Amino acid sequence: MSENSVLLTSDPHLFDFDHFCGGFNELYWGWVRDVRVQFQKKSQQDFWYNSRQLWSGECAFNYTQINSTTIEHFPKCSTIYGILVINEKTDLSIDQMIPYFENIGEWFGGLQLENTNFTSLGFLSKPKNGYVTVYCEKFGFYIRNNPNLTDYSILRSFFMHSDGDGKECDIQITNNTQLDAESFCDFGFFHYFTDLRVRGNLKDCGCQGDEIDYSNLSTYKSCTKLYNGLELKNMSKLREKVSFNLQNNLEMRRFGIPILKAIQNSEAIDQSKEEGIALFNFENLHPDFCLTIDEIVFFLKSGVAFLNLNSKVCATKDKFKGNDICRFESMEKLAENCYMILGDVTVDSGDEQYVSKLRATHYLFGSITIRNTTLKSLEHFVRLLYIVDLGDGGPVIKINSNKKLRNVNFAGLQSIFTRGSNRTAFIQDNHPKIFESYGGFCSLIQSTDMYRIYRTRLNFVGGNCGGSRRSGI
Image 1 (cartoon, one colour):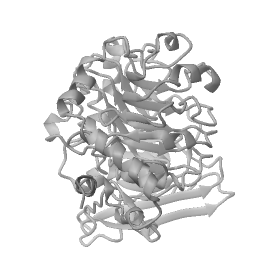
Image 2 (cartoon, helix red, strand yellow):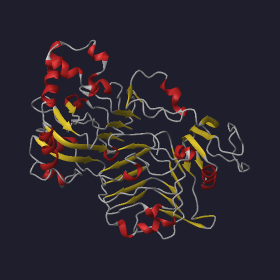
Image 3 (cartoon, helix red, strand yellow):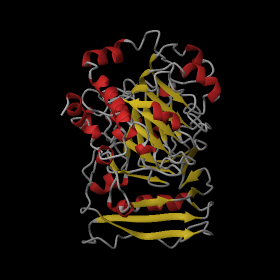
Image 4 (cartoon, one colour):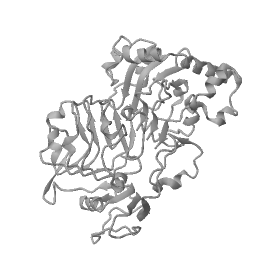
């Protein structure tokens, strides 16, 4: 056995026996092998020098957001350093961006391509030497919520490099509704990786092995490949059974059962104790189906969890049982003493002076984004009990670029409702010890109550979670 063969077969990323046993011709395999040997020969000293010392040089892009103003500062280098954010604020076409990307051969950083109208990734031009090496294990490579995206073929030329300890880049291709990603897991260099998350697209590939619970176990019957390992947690302790299934009623617009006053779990062993989850499923109803505030609050206080909650919130007034209901526009405009907030709450740079307004909030009907602040803790969310995010499937909680943030405990949080199974928390580029109080485990509450843990469970993504996207909050 040759030296190169030993090196290749000792790499844990290469144990995909389908590819070892066939499909590669000798020339192609030899080229892939040489590329990987070349990467392995990069010393740790060189790697850390590149990733730490050159981020402020002429080849660094430190603006993050790509738009018509910042693009003029894009480095004219074959090796670049930067986290690139391309989204609804990017006022450039694919053709306008191509000249700036066409010479890239190495890239230290990451990509967030989300909420665009792009039909392809054509701005990522194929380099002259045939491929781009991306060192993104600390920053991630995210392509999400792009409704018109249909073509990812340029990624055939991209190799996402692992660090010296084998930690992979967090790669997510999610919620691109026109994208056929059925072949993505075997596409280009991506078949080397186990750390892929491809879901919510027109077609997906593979199954997520770290998201299995009793409620979705049946969906894994046809899986031939698992990504992100295999994790089975609390499969027998929680008695999960859909006890109220409201499904495939295409003309149903309202729930309308005002006499429903209590919900008791029929699966409980001892009716004096909570022994199981009251699991409801509201799925595939009329597009205008809505629940009133009173109905949702009733479900929340009854300890209900939802498999799916395909619903809107019915029109409501400005009071709920004598308490103020506020509609979120900005932290500056938010009223004091809001018991209930409707809308996606964003706490941005400069909002630190207003964040105390959230101390009275018990209910949030929307998502939470905290970004670019100097906050050290989430103490102002101390009374937040319930989050109901019935939006388009983006992160329920997004906490990024808060360099001083170390305490992320939602101390009172009891339950989270989402429209479907996409219960994501995006945590990235904050204080490196943000999860120190949890022993490094990605979490936002401290509890030993398995039912509370289940009702508030989230799938964590982003660099602060060290690539460990555990299911459960």
